[in-house]
Amino acid sequence: MKLPRAWAVTSVVAIVWLAVFRPWTIRPIAEQPHGPFDAKTYVAAIWDARVLPTLRSRAVQFASFQDRPDHATSVSLNGVVLDVNTSSRVGTAAIDVAPGDGRADALLMIGPVIRGTALRDVLDFIQFTDFTNQIQFADVANALNDHVLTTVIEHLDAATLKGRHVQVLGVAWRQSSTVDVLPFVVPVQLSIGDRP
Image 1: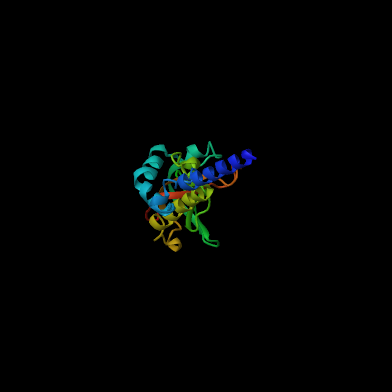
Image 2: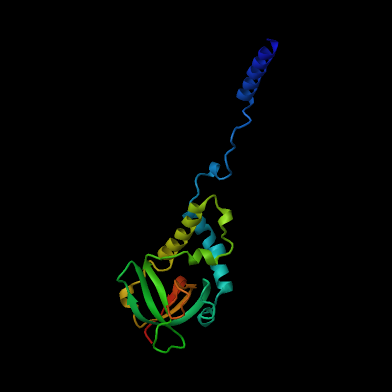
């Protein structure tokens, strides 16, 4: 009879101890005191300090990208706009890359929608493991594309592009590994000159 009473006393003591000391209390993760993750703020903070210097230092001539079409690559190119397609929200300008041959070599993305995650994926200092979850990682890709829209091509007049010379620093990628499919280029720096 004394054994159940001892267990009862031990149980009460254990419950009181757990209630007072709460060993299961969850500590907040480091980012919570600073508020929720804001991908737009994150991208603004790294754009000039890391994104542009990284892409500039690793840029290859567009012809070199053609040799490794399966990977998003930082490229520099110059050429002439042959045609502009704004029939969908993923607007593109077909570029005849110098030395020109009169045929399109790349599709420069001019918005108002930039598709894909190539810009994020080419930046090896942005790793999935640096973020709390997949949503934050995806938000960074979207924020990078949005930054291009608002800082690089916001004031671009698609109607005046055809026939003009362009110089581009950007990220080239293909939707397909088929060489015949023109690669897209997401511009991070864009200079538009006069018609040749």
